[in-house]
Each structure stands twice: as C-alpha cells, then as structure tokens.
Amino acid sequence: MALRIHWAWVIAAVAFVTLIGAAGFRAVPSVLIDPLHEEFGWSHGTIGSAVSINLVLFGVISPFAAALMDRLGIRRVVACALVLVAAGAGLTVFMTEPWQLLLCWGVLVGVGTGSMSMPFVATITGRWFVKRRGLVSGVLTAAGAAGQLVFLPLVAALVTEYDWRVPSITVACAALAVVPLVVLLMRDYPSDVGTTAYGATEDDEAARPVSGSSVLRSLRMLREAARTRTFWLLAGGFAICGATTNGLVGTHFVTAAHDHGMPSTTAAGLLALVGIFDVAGTILSGWLVDRFDPRYLLVGYYTLRGMSLLILPSLLQPHVEPSLWVFVIFYGLDWIATVPPTVALCRERFGMNGPIVFGWVFASHQVGAAIAAYGAGAIRDVNGSYDLAWYVAGGLCAFAALMSGRIRRHVTRPPAGSPPPEPSLQRVHRS
View (cartoon, rainbow, N blue to C red):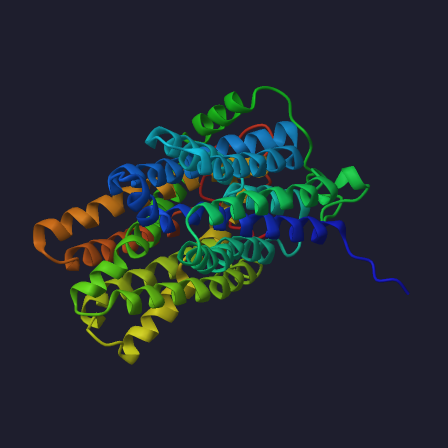
C-alpha cells in the first residue's frame, strides 16, 4: 500500500530548506568585516553600515513581502527573493567602492532575505495547516538558527583557506540552487493541488488570492491593526524580545564576557551553543502552542528570560562555571521560543491577514534589537561595564510578560477583510 503524504508537508519541507538558506545568507556579512577591511581599507563603520542596512530591511520588508505573497503567490516571491540574494552576493566580487557593498550586501541581500523571514513562516502555516500549526511554526522558525549554524563555520573556513570572494560565490550558487526546488514543488494554496489545509474541516476558512496593491494593503493593515490593543501588546512584547536577544545578548555577550576575563573564543563558543539549543527550544515551543494558551506561554518565556538576565552579571567569570552552562542552555531554549505563540495570536486575532500583521510585529522586533545594540554599547562606554544593561533588560522582560498577559482571546474567527473590533469582556473560548 503506497504511503500518501499530504502536500502540506512537502510545502513545509521546501520552506524549511529555503529558510535555512535565508538565515545563512543574512549571517555571512558579519564574517567578512575583517577581510574587507584588510583588502580595501574601508573602516569597520562603513562595512558595518552594510550589515545595518541588511538588518533594517530584513525587518521592514517583511510585511510588504507577506502582502505580496497574497497578491502574486508564495512561489514567485520566494523565487525572486532567492535571485536577489544570489545577485547581491555574486556581484560583490566585482566591487571596488563602498557604495557597491551597501547596495549588494545591504539592499539586495537585505530585501531578499527579508522576503523569506518570519512572516513567510506565518504565511505557510496559515495557508497549509490547521492541525500541527504550532509545531510546524516552531520547526520552520528553528530553520533560521539552523541556517546560521550550517553556514557560519563553513564561511569562516572558506575565508581562512581562500579569501572573502569564495564564500560570496558560494552563497550566490546556494541561493540559485534552491530556486528550482521552489519553482517545482512550492504551491501557493492547497486548492492549487486539489486539496485542503492539513487538518482542515468544512468550518475552517480557506485562504484565497487577493487583489489590489500589495504595498497599500500592507499599509492599510498596519493602520487597521494599530487601532487595536492586541497589536500594540504583541508589538511591544516582540520589540523587547528583539532587544533582549539579537540586540543585547547576540551583539554584546562576547564583549561582556571578555570584560570579566573570559577568552573571546570561549565566549563565542558559548554563544554558538545558545544557537544549538535555540533549535530545540523553538520546536518545543511550537508543540506547546498546539496544546496550551499562547498568551501564557509568552508570559512564562518573558518572565524566565528576565530572571536569567538579572543573574547573568554574577555568572560571568574568567572560567566557565556550571552555573553559566545552565544559563547558556536555558537561554538557548528560550531564545526565539516567543515566535510560535506570537504567530498563533496574530493568526487568531487578524485571520488571513495575520501574516501581514505579524510582519509589522516582526519589524518591531528588529527595531528593538537595533535600539538595544546601540544602548548597551553606550552603557558600556559610560559605566565601564554591561551590568546596568542586563538589569534594564531583565526589567523590560517583566514588562513584556505583563503585556502578554493582557492580550485577550477571541471567541469567533475574524473576517478576512479586516480585523474585528476589540472584544468586550467575554468568556474565553479555545478553538
């Protein structure tokens, strides 16, 4: 008897491969800073500005890409995004001026990877899954961490063995290699292959194409979502999430540990270990979303994260003690565990427009990360240590937990056109 696999799992597999690549492509420029400085004499600030543009576009382009997927289809948008990444990476081998670096690694790669970021996950899970939606969200989100783990060691080895041009060409070839996979196997809607979303019933709303300007629709959804308290609670919490992960720990942990006498290579290894446990934590979080109220999961994640940040200054020492290993493992499990419940709440509150709204929520994540990356550095310059930054971050996590607990659940499904009015006090129903 032939084994029949629902088409949704094929879509999820293709999305997983795509997201692994997108995360790896976006992470590569950080490895090239020193080689580019040595060859061209460009300042670290100039080279870093390309990374900054990349990060900003990675967040800002997300809601527009989600709207474009509704208008043109997932397959077209993702295929074009991969081509942009390949062009941005490949053209760098011909550059001679700083503005070319800003254009290639900053704009082209930033737009390309931003089109395949977290709202892409929300779009896939929203269209193709009803059952196992949380689990699939966790697996696809974990692909981001897996991409960095796969690419960064490879890129570092290629730079050491050859020069920075080889990894640039490698990224371009890898992006182009995924395009045929997307074109041949990715489908926009379950109806395209004569099926329904995995686990769907007759009562479940089916995704369908939309018309009109994608840019205007994205901006309209921002305007309408911004009228609701739910949006601001989600965006505020996710901004703190970005501030306490990518912005603070991801940017400053190695330097902070070095301030306490720990070798930078040891601190970098600990940060890599955070990424490994991040994969397991995000998948587990997706599994939990299918079984528990996502609001309470967010409350738990932010509360525990805040407590761990408050005690981190006392754990940093020249040598790695068992208590620091515990922090690394725990923080890795909690790193982006907030994504699956946030996606679930956006979907529940805003219906088929959930991926676009989540794109704007994700943009707040990147803004929070950027503010924390600068703010923690400023605190270090003024005080000579990062201690205050850890304490402030711990307090912000408590605030994020409070905001998450204030989100209200909804009894009925929202219409596809626009978000419904904020509900009055009513009985909570878990659909």
